[in-house]
Image (cartoon, rainbow, N blue to C red; front, side, top):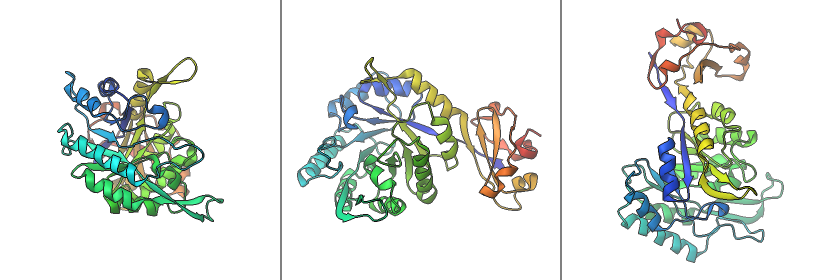
Length: 346
């Protein structure tokens, strides 16, 4: 029996070709391409020229690119975002068609389009403290997903107000039915994905639909707090869970510059690079159960192998300070027979 070491990937939102290439050089696994100057609005549809510039650069982009399709930022005046008119839908369809016909994207290489639309109902949701019920706009999303084919589709943070509701999982399942491959969310309309409550909501969605829908945890992802959230979420199959960050620099007055904060990005990549996931063996009768005496999963983090019980009742059985260096084994399979009791080297 073999324990397979897995990696947690990081996607970087870029607002220029130069930033995208720099992120790739530092180790990003994927790029979300947005319009220049649109960070403060949450990212908008980039100019086709930006993708041309990216593809024509001598350094070449070799990782997948997700192209944002969003015609405008928040409407202001307290009006909800991601609710589009027929005219705006037509603009989004035209943008997708332009990128598709450019020959600059490859579905086979994992390039996709990023968009999302919701609808808000007049009735108040009794389970959400007087907030209006919000759901995925199936009509608009279906039109965009069909237009994007053969390229995949990512439903972006338009899902945030839905993620906080009791019907979040049902709505995520609806995205699967509509043909989405990925969902980017912060877990709530308030706060980022590193807030514990939001991490828990993302965890629940991953657990319920992660086998069919890749979950991308984004919103406020910086090195502070990433380790804790990553430890919690790195228990799913590889590619089921990604993190997403803009990792931008801020000016002296706290203004966003859209320049990449390389120190911050390297720190985040190091955190995720040290966090590997090893296959679970939760069944009685498995080799791991026989060694430990209880069902558990193993999580390789930095320089130790943590034994995490499957049930909360078994938390007291976890070794408090496992101390074994398995760094030399990171990135390849570890034969089970090389691990002794509580995950220590035999």
